[in-house]
Image 1: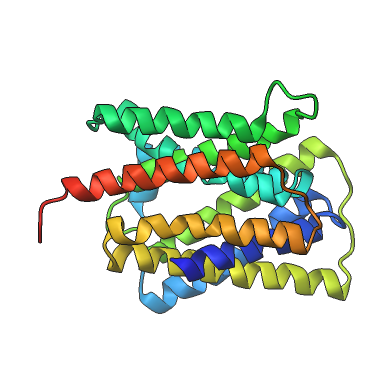
Image 2 (image 1 turned 30 degrees about the vertical axis):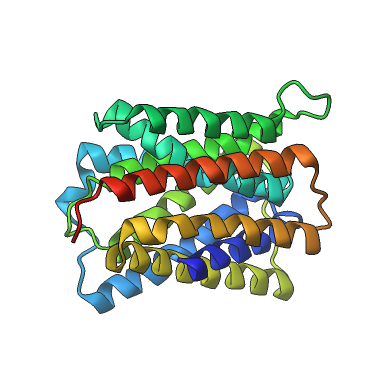
Length: 280
């Protein structure tokens, strides 16, 4: 899980770098096309069929819609806002997953968990600072992207076992390709010829992304969820460190306070869930 979170942060850094030189739509399309090719090869090697009837079920179509918005808006957030703030907002995803599971999947949530959820959302507001003079609507890009990933994760829980991580990865990157094409049409910027350095940065982002996704699925499927999930928050450490060291971003007290509240609320919810699990 820690390796996965580190690789995701590295992927974000490479994408942020290359989107300064290329249109976002072009980057999404190229990144998505490369990823779907890699996962198509991995699926074939694993003997998993990509084209299955289960892909077109209602829940999987909803998953694709949420993935569309998650991929598009989070990459826009990485490109247009500080990486540290986008990463911090993304850490609220587990809180929204619990909230969404209660609303859409009718899972029970006790009073302590409700308190933790609302405290965590308050932490997100501190990070966003909607009443501050330096607030920008661009800050909402990361929040919309996070909500997209939350919906994707919720509907992933209903995915049939025949849709392996390789198959889900193939359709995840296919969705990114489609999102990039749609944004490119809306944005209207002409595509740019790639230089060797830009190609290498995109290739490095792709390798990091494929490794991160594979490591994440391995952690979630082979380890205890209650044991590995808290280590998701290590992405905040990696993301903020890269933002400060590589991109020269500045951290302030509200950002650090909001991060502490979000992580504290998420860890408390994870601890509550682990306590409720029956002893093995």
